[in-house]
Length: 105
Image 1 (cartoon, rainbow, N blue to C red):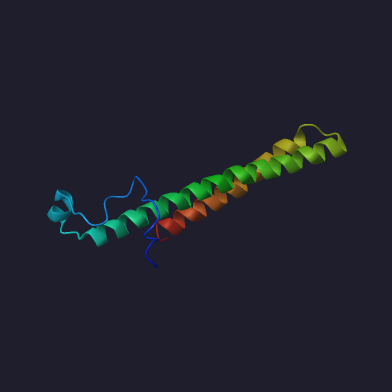
Image 2 (cartoon, one colour; image 1 turned 135 degrees about the vertical axis):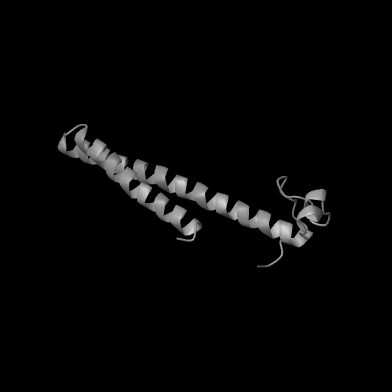
């Protein structure tokens, strides 16, 4: 992994890169090890947030397609409800897959 741009502003959630605190000395972590763990934790949180957006997008997309079919065939609201349910199933499948991947399973 390449080092971040030295001219970019640090993330406020990042601990200082060159200072070690009492917790680091207690647990025997170097500043580099501590920051690698923080980066990995942030990466996992972003992956799960992305999976949540996939869930919402799946529901919206399938419900939208169902709505268009409802208007075309004049079946209100059956295709919209069916589309939303299919979107929820597909989104939950992707969410579960992402959670399993994050947990190493």
